[in-house]
Length: 434
Image (tube, rainbow, N blue to C red):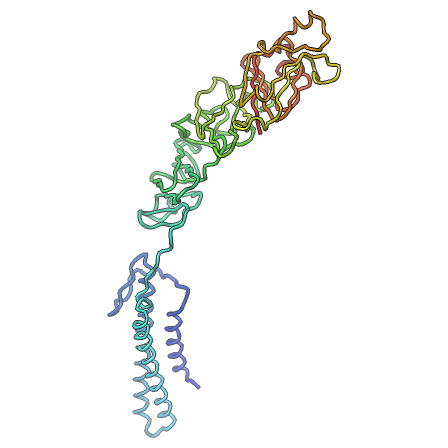
């Protein structure tokens, strides 16, 4: 059985071998390392140098402890001529010490002979992967999609790089203050930049940031447009009708439309001065584009409170349906309505269609009505009765600067907000939707 001191020597030697094969390395925050002949002090931010240093240090300690144990055993042997028991213990200690020295030296020699790189640890760089990283110019660290305080980033790594071969561009919201705040506590001096594969962006002067991948939709701009990007603060993509939210309500400076060109459809939007986008009120002409990206910053002088977002079926409008029918009477498509009809077929509407209401002449063929009736109610402005949808379309009716948006059958136009005061329709816009 091993004595206590022999057990200590055994476990130190065992720790040396476990270090060779260990899979986990723990970095110590030590600034000044002991200078040991034959060992190079670890260099900052270099894991291989730490491993090599501690590997050699354990080898040194194992050898020193074995030598000390050998010396103690020799002294005990000299002092025990009259004590056979102590002499036997001393000889055992000397034997174990020699074995420890031999094993330590043999391990280092063997490992250096077989594979010197096991002693001189080298780090193999991982292959590059796609993603968003902090960089100091040569090294990279994964970056999060948002950071409340840029000072948390390691010094020297305050640049973002988007590493990819082909991929969706990213958008970076750069806030001058921490916690996603502008210089006024809200959105002043906030900028948004777009980065493609391989491009970098400095975080100099930035307090916090957010990142997202650019996706199709409609982006609100606070300060107008700068080319095809918003100038200043910009919203996340909007894809459905909604009330305008702060800080864009009554302060909208522009609107940016991003379309997916692989899709047959495009985004469109209509702004209203009322919070309910389905009610009648002042509104702006529909905004849409065939391009992939376009920014618009010319708006009317009335306040904007809500928006109707529609998915414009630009390339494949035939799939939206048969078209839209306009009638001179309520429930014009009903039996016995005896209504004049204007049939706007899918081919007529095309990708979009607009016209003045007094240019839309009713067809009274087969309808029993007095001649005087047909002359008085000749066009859609004179007699706006009802609208029938034969598919997926958006219809916008205007009276002056006021409009109302419809997406389903209107059985009696005279009861709508737009025409209830006795107003007459001046123009109409129709577009196929999805």
